[in-house]
Length: 342
Image (tube, rainbow, N blue to C red; front, side):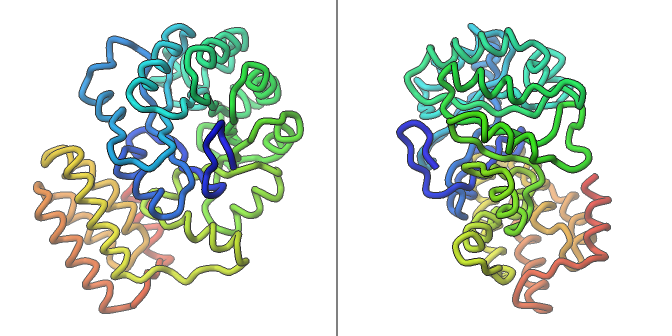
């Protein structure tokens, strides 16, 4: 998989996710086998460029190349300016968001709302590509709704504008994240254009990854929600693609160490107060479906310091290791965990 001058080590990409793909998470996924990770989206609104949140999202210190920054907005010149600024701050690839289905993004005519105005899509693609001397990629959906599927038109426009690669989620904006992703549109787009295509949507296991690659002919796959609390999914997928074998579940002691290192990075990145609170969702994802996880999470949510969190996580994983050497996901706990997460 190659994007511009960057030869990736494999075909496994971390999807951009607001509130998730911060620098600690991107670095962890790369350590766990991802070939590339895309940042949380950074607004093209100049008024917000100097806010703590935007500055933190633009922090790539120590991150393994290539540095990929996703920008979001609906006005071509603002997006072009945002692309230039992020390149000045270290971005090596710029990704344009035309896929986010969130109301607060679509209500300002950004994200997947752009798919209702293909003329503006064309202007954005051309101006952003012309604004920077690094590769520009595009992430989008199959269309605004089942009645308005524009993926093929957008893909051809992207190729003509000089977009270096296209990531396509197999749902419309109307679908949000409901139902099952469909891959026929991705396969059709792959056949129609020459630039690399990344397939996205519902890829949650090594077997599903191979199926999607084979079915769509995509050059790479992009994984989002399935990596939450399971960043080792990338090495599991790569091993399966290489050998056809499923790796055994990871050792509890190993994942306990991974979690503690991730928590330390989060605390260092966000500070004591925010770090403690942001870590809660990651701890919940890591422990979802494990033995006794509901009781553990309910107690963990009440902890107010990072030191208490780390002790609680260490104690919980020590307790898990008394029951099994490797992670065991229990059917009754999965439903319990889902209810808590929702």
